[in-house]
Length: 334
Image (cartoon, rainbow, N blue to C red; front, side, top):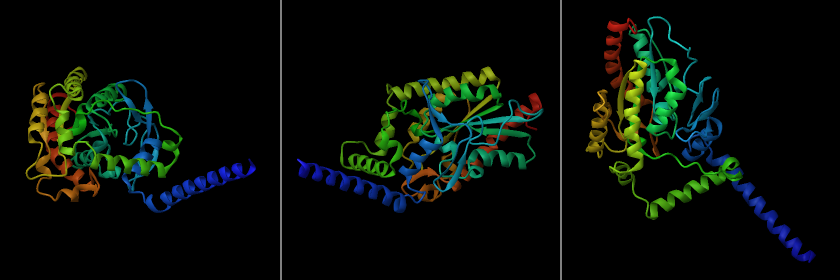
């Protein structure tokens, strides 16, 4: 009996040692601050928090700070990736709310290089009286963006709401699994589970990325049905606030010529413009560039700082036009 117990303890000790070594090697050699799955894990752990309301699901914590994909990320007291913002704008100042997902938040992009910050900086440099905030949150769909805007930003009375739309914004509500100890504490487990899932997708029956996006826009797909309602909700909310809403379409950055989703862009445009809301496709701002030069990393096609600068360049003239109207009608943003 003692012999069996000794062998069991020996096996357990070897297993624990191997797991500890695997964890140590992962953190020492793989965690270079640019590995997508580990950085997303840190983002979820250090910046996000669960919000159990069914239309929000998760949000940014207030006053959070982390270093993700090589750049510092911090949130203000409202959970925005912005400087502190007052409850109301100063007299004559037009307030701009930037709403969206991880692309608006600026995944892998320094705060001053996000298109939200660049637009505010460009308008200020041009002499416009503006302030603004970045309400972007990673892994959001349009319905979550609307719910968070109503909860956290509507009371700040923005004059212009800039909604950035990306093709995956028609996804259904994320599934929030109950995370075990390994999910919360083990970098090695995060890498292993992510790579196994990637292999299963590559060699299994999962659709490729183009097919996946297209399926989101089936007329009866739950995510797209709710996205259309959310786009209508943004238009109604803007009208209630007396704000101008504008929707910018962010292109998928893996292929440009020919762009594989022109028909989906047209479908979203029809929905937005059907509410009398301007819709601006930003594909022309980047379509002559090499796609991979616009990615945060080669495996991670989130828009990098170069892409954000191009998008900001396409946004500024459109927002300036809205400011012209506000200046004439309300003496704001002049």
